[in-house]
Length: 262
Image 1 (cartoon, one colour):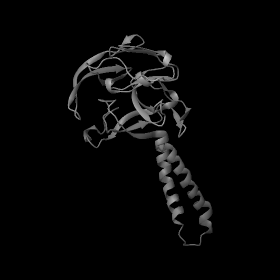
Image 2 (spheres, one colour):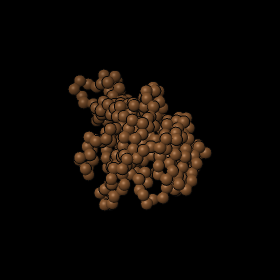
Image 3 (cartoon, one colour):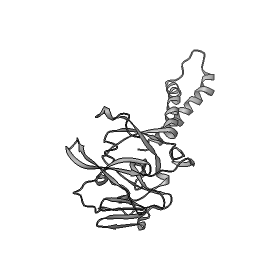
């Protein structure tokens, strides 16, 4: 469901009703005569829909985390806010950038339209920038030939299924974050899709190496062995970017998570 399009259509309809009431219908009604219900409701909802549309399109947009691919950073059920202007101002509905501000940086948690199905929003961490050489062999990440250091942080308890995963501290750019890497899952990447620029990636039994094309980004989930990401379906084009996630504003299952993230 394209919620932005639905909101835009509601804005157009209620705005038309508001204009009709303000400049036409009101002048032809007898004094004291109430407006028809459809005019009254449409005109009264217009300011609310306008505010929501502007906030959601240009400032912040709420999302709900549907899967565990970003554990431990983001949990299933987290309601998060996404900054819509960090990477530039985009026209709503068509998502076309009209004002450039910043580019995604390594370590950013980014929301984007899934390249294989742009009607679906995904969230992952930016690992590779345009022109980067990203290698992930034997579950060790290298960027432009440099190994990304992993610092042991012990184990992470998955409370939903009561099992532990090895947890490590990783630094991408200026961002430090935790990742989960399972020791007993093979490094081979199965079910790779035939994505655009597939020829820029080389796959082996121990992982892959990719050179990120211009205007694209390589993204991965923090829950490395439970994430379908650029290793499987390829690069994220710039036109698919929605914004940078930065804040957890609610979680029905764990109120202590409110206010977390960065």
